[in-house]
Image 1: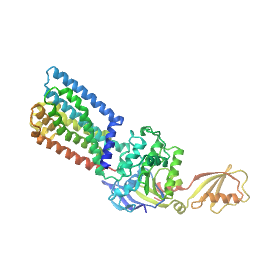
Image 2: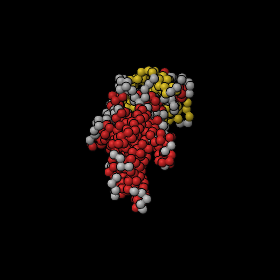
Image 3: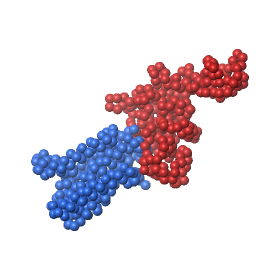
Image 4: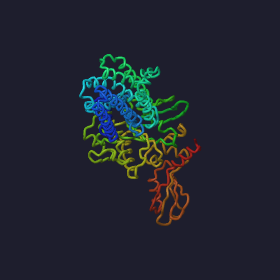
Length: 250
Length: 303
């Protein structure tokens, strides 16, 4: 078996077999349950139409996916370094690129697990309307580079900073900053600064694309510019992760 | 030569971590790398394993530059870092199978059982590593290091935290490996480990090798000897004749202090004592002189 696949399988085991990984999945399931209940009850009271419920659920899934990718991304380099399990990997006859790509594949599996876990909740929140398929497709297209990008950012940060805690804190602050325009609402986003921030912030870019596809019923292909911007984000963070990983010694 | 380091320097930013490190390790030899905390032992190991480049000097491991040809070196070298972490959710069998695959040596169940028996590790079937004791973890780490059937093993503080039996068993394993022609680089704080195992030592102080060579040669060259305490069942023979390799320093109660030349073999010296009529009933080793040498070197004596 290829070294990338061997390491990726181990990373999947870290999520699906370790108490730490299973606890995170359980926490994600609990958060999704809470959000979907909220959205369903809002929709039933006609406070929210079906498209908005699907959009809201997709946004929550992407946010939680990014959070989980950050936690796992920090752990896969900084956590392993602290626990002393990284060096045995580094002294195996496998190139660093293969180790790195195995770990990146692990982050992709985290997102895949999160996506699969979220499907029944998404169905529960928006299964009654016409927007579910668009939601699923645009979440896969826009969410994947954004979530992976945050995972790569966390890996790179974990490789550079000396402690898991510091790397996790920095990444969570970045995620919070990226999510802040969404939290503060549309008025801030209409200002010049807000508009610029909207274009350079990968989370905003992805959410705007989701909004356009799910709520405004635009074609998915019309969002190619947004999609390219999210790809650019994941490309930059991939470089950041690779550069950091190559600096990792004992 | 398995490891050859000549005048290596490692700089990180403006700081000089290693300034002048020299080390040479042959097949079947156990080399003890000792020195105070922060002397650069772990960095030396990192350089030998190709985990960091050297700023200047020559490093050859198995005849190759470990930084530029790390895959060649890693495929033939076993390593047990000081803080060797494991995937706690795996069993020992799964762990070894994982590394077997990474080393492109997929292990059968029988081979995994052989690896475990080689290091005297007998976990329950399916027992998770999270439930392993410190000694079991060290053994598992050593089993992992042996997967590539290495020509060279590099160990950083392998006996830390082991009980006396665990230490003795690890010593036996390392001696067997050396007898099979594997070179062992042992980095440790425990001079007792070095005395028991190593035929060559290197002492690092502030990133410099202050002394390197055969243990007995170094002790002899520094005028140091092996010190023992002996106890007699009766009076010593008249005029207290003794072998020329030994000198009797003082008597204290029933005990006498005996210094034996560093190059002499104590067993042979004790036979001579018996032949001369000494009624020896108990012999205790005080030290081999390594401690005195180490203290002198690291407290600014020779260094």
